Image (cartoon, rainbow, N blue to C red):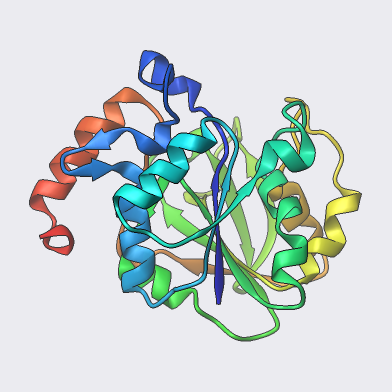
Length: 238
């Protein structure tokens, strides 16, 4: 199964750290963050990696060469321009590469375990989204479940609707490409992958698969310290 890794953005929440590089390339201990994600994908058995880049593409290619990773690089900005933005954009860019195959979609600024990544190698006719129980669901998109199927995704709910949040890890069938033209700009002016997923959910085409191990978001400077501590204590990275 091919894996699409979204890494086109700069990562402005990392403040000055992303002035000259994307957040995916911020070094944590021995290597840039993206290296840990790629390592786990390879350990999980995935070999066909598609890296969707944009900001500082040259540095991304240098990273792949230096650390000897093999991945097909797709420049989102060259295909869509720099004004079209959002989590749906990387999926739009790889439609012709994927064709009629199922594929995995992973955010390049999140880390998942080998076990959970491997569990998403599912060859059936359904789409899947990874859910994770979180103490502060109000900061994320909350997954509303109906007998294991995704009913809807409520973004940053003001009232409590559940603790199972969206981690951004998906297994898609080619059905996702059919929904892209139906997605309009979100209130924040972006094209959202969650909106396309919700359209599939309305047709009972999306199942929820819960994260069994861990999920680490790499979005702001404090996450660098958290990840560093995690790497030191985790047996998965020795």
